[in-house]
Image 1: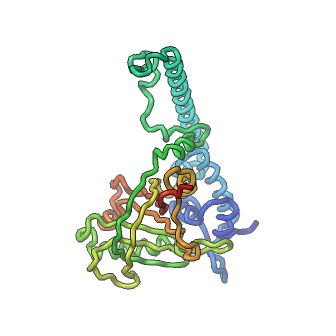
Image 2: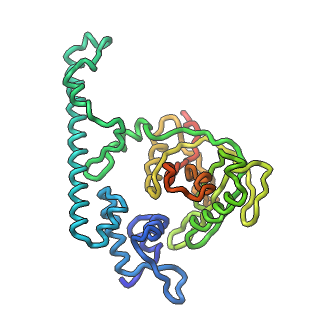
Image 3: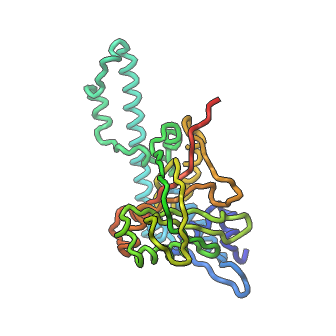
Length: 327
């Protein structure tokens, strides 16, 4: 194996080209451009690094720590791995404590069936002592490096919101080629600053989606971004004004670049008793009408991307939905 294109790496390791570009931007890997070759390529050593990154990400290690491990500082790598093992041990203890509390609750319920209508389990000292230091956010618990509450999240929709996006006018920019997200993002960011959009429309929002979608065997695809604008605001080329009809969406918040969570949200919609997907015609090649809303993006662009903005890097994944048809 001498080298691989970004499309070949994406297909081989089942990782998005967008994620690979993010790793490259973060300085974890490097690509090169071969003379008389249309696409950027990864040499054998970089492909090996990508494999290492994928393995370490599956073990729930953050990119900052992965960078340290890839720097081959064995002492620092050992410290990171020991800390991760300790964290998983603590999560395991938390999970076992939750199990014991639930089992005790069940025992008490079975012991006192006649008192179910007046059952104050907060007076049970054994339950209180077990749960005193448990966290509220159950979906942060992990076991064996895997999120253990996916089934509950699908069944109960604890992390999925149903949102209604209103009709609006947007400034749109589309580009097909290498790094389309960065290209259109830069154009839109310049427009936000030059037009002082945030001052004119403080509630302005930014959406993006693949357009056209990636195709098998291709190393490039397109991406389109929208910024909601006042109806009477003129936009310069290459931006164009469009009307968005709005609609109902299932929304799920991720941290950039966890786009693999699309599969979870799709599964949640598929299993919902009330909702079903309302995708666009696939011939439109626009992610079926799904959207990615980059939260507080307009504010961040207007302010020059302040590092202390707590919403930086948070994205809502949005799938168009409608009421599930009943037989």
